[in-house]
Length: 163
Image 1: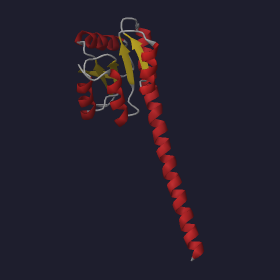
Image 2: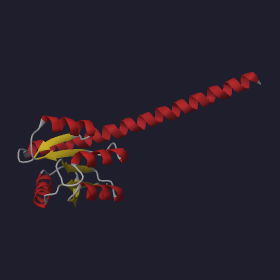
Image 3: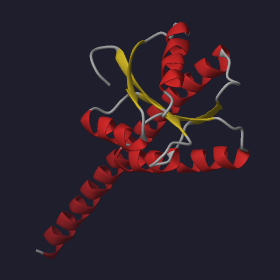
Image 4: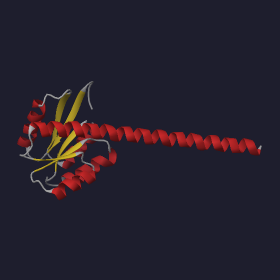
């Protein structure tokens, strides 16, 4: 994320016209948050951009030359498991959708068959899922820390008892 209240949206597709059209479509949704768009024409370029600044949302093409969308998604998820990623593809293949969701995509859209309502829903759902993943991670960390404290206190109690 960048700036106060501005969501950085990374658009990853080897088709520049599609990236521009997607940015226009998202802007047209009039979402309750300000968005800035960063574009990448390849998976490798996208990973470099994510290393520099982690975006708040990613639209990721499934089929690209070089690094595929799935490979790029898996690399992004290793460092940023809460990153909301919406996989986009030119063909509506259920197998592809399942692979993308298993790899960590929050949603899956088929190019050319997405209307404004579907796009809006995908963005909102992806953002909510990303926030839920972040909340779960923070809760797990808090539980682990509480367990460490409990074990330490029990150990101190046992040591004092032996003394």
